[in-house]
Length: 65
Image (cartoon, rainbow, N blue to C red; front, side, top):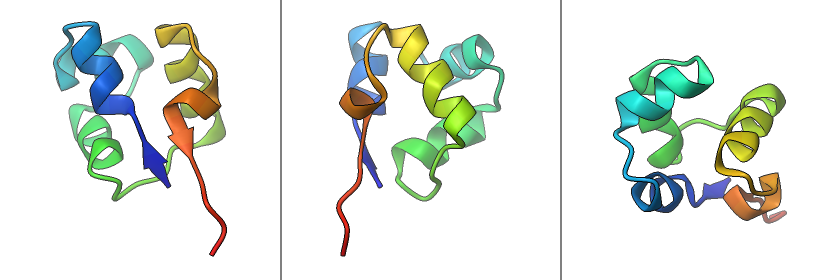
């Protein structure tokens, strides 16, 4: 799953730690998401979309193989 999390975080001038605290996860989780080594739970995807005031689809994209 691809994502635009790093872009959104940069636009809001947030560190990984700042964003992690805002959505209730660890900095390592944000790092893994940005590196596309981890797919978020539905709950986390919603929390991130709500935080950035955008849709989940704007943050995350998935292409069937």
